[in-house]
Image 1 (tube, rainbow, N blue to C red):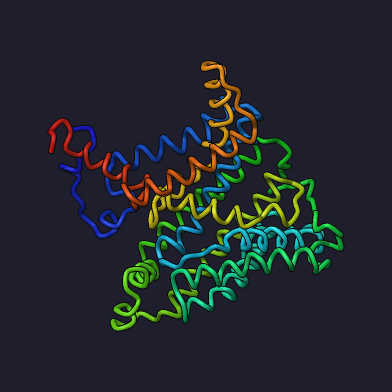
Image 2 (cartoon, rainbow, N blue to C red):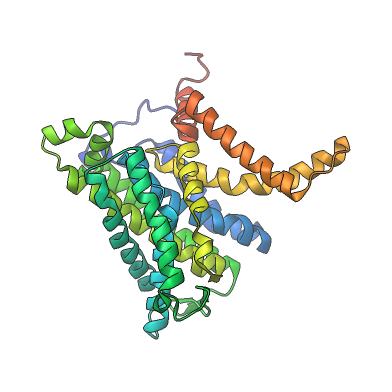
Length: 358
């Protein structure tokens, strides 16, 4: 049996509460990090960095934030792109108005702006839930679009809301190459994912899950719904805001409010649904699926068309992508509501018993 727990005894509370209690998991994570930090820089091209790796890392961070709110606390949100926009423009204002401000504090301040914005639009969650809450958070999307187009001070008096940043540095090192930007984003992702993993395993994470499963019963046993819901909105919005600032500063460089449209909110929600709600690993699966699928379709469909003698236009590829997204979401909701993370968990369970069939 390749993946088994037999003989791995715990002799202390510290070892029993490890994030990865099984030795095989620790080895796999160590190898994965080694490949991400050491192997990828040796093999990846500039196209791979800019088109796949950097978007995947940043979207994984954003999906992680959405999963905190939707997956762990059960509060449906359609305003994730608005939180990303507030984080991006908040970080931009601190960056241009405070000369010499380092990049990491800039990202944190942008995340704090998004956190306060998220708490403000999370207040309706104290009275409504489900579809009504989704509509309330959708209002944040429309409000942010109006705010960054009409309030010129927020965009440094840009008439169209388009802004840009240059000469990014971290600890004196310039982020002027795709490799440097990838490693910086990956480092932030690893740190935040580790913090979130510890957070959801603690008391506040249990409160979120209790509110998600049955908020009335949670209130009866002493959990404060207001604190649990607003803390979930705060943590989620902060992470999404940092991801939005990274998306604008690192990936786009120059952006406008349309870069954070409602379509991006739906994509983030799709990442959580396909990857698996209430799962840290599911955030990575969903982000990888949503980021890589359009690129794969753009490459595969014309090649398949050439083989069968059918020409696929750009519009046909775009429509096929949307149909695939919709079909997969329906399929996952019917066949496996817990997404790819559940399939991964089932695979590990099979490996525990392999080569025995049951």
